[in-house]
Length: 304
Figure 1 (tube, rainbow, N blue to C red):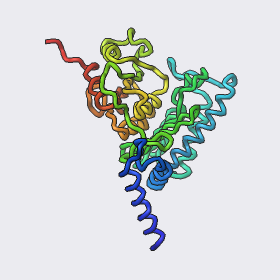
Figure 2 (cartoon, rainbow, N blue to C red; figure 1 turned 135 degrees about the vertical axis):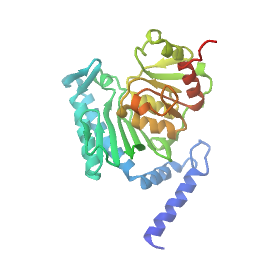
Figure 3 (tube, one colour; figure 1 turned 30 degrees about the horizontal axis):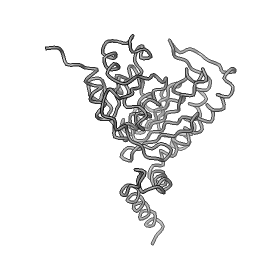
Figure 4 (cartoon, rainbow, N blue to C red; figure 1 turned 120 degrees about the vertical axis):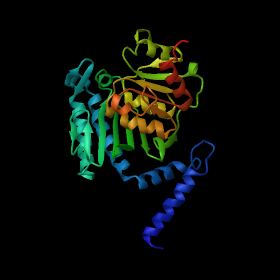
């Protein structure tokens, strides 16, 4: 048997073995499947491997800087919007890693904008340090986000939390993983038991939000504003949060996390239940049962 045929046969066998039988822990292939799952995913998605490499390198820069925050140089980009030399250094590192592997790909980053052709078939969308305000204050709730789009559709996603060493990954059609363990959105169905993440005006205090957001918050068990949207979405994907509502977000806030929620069995839409969220920046993401109730709470039927 030729080397190529052997690789094809082995890959097909592993895909079947990983995706078909489920072990006692609910993960594909039983307790020993983690290594096989990782092998198959990495073998099939080399671009995901590069994104993981880039995210971990950026995480090393962030972790090193977190040990000496007093020397950090901070600049203000706008109201409650900060940038540090760590954001810039992390983005430079990510771009260098991506372009070393794929020099023809475009990169859209929060700090340096678009690098490469606007109409490139492949475009990376990156946030080198989401949660900069948390980082500046030594609050360990921030992450690196990297997504790859092909002809405008997100196909690969990585969110890396360097302080917890948690790596969230997703590939279109292949599920969402946390440190090589497949994850799913929450199975919670009762809205009054749902814990929501939020990024809306005054979402830190639901009592001061607009009426529609307040209505949505009051029906749930609680609302958390964690200060890092990419982690909010990753937490929806793995079931730590039941839903998320965000207002005025940017593509680098949404690209990676949205794929993770979808691949984990959740729903993502704008406030009208449509797919305009990447353009508007207004997004709902949740498990299917909670999503429907969030959307209804946000858009209550008019009184008769």
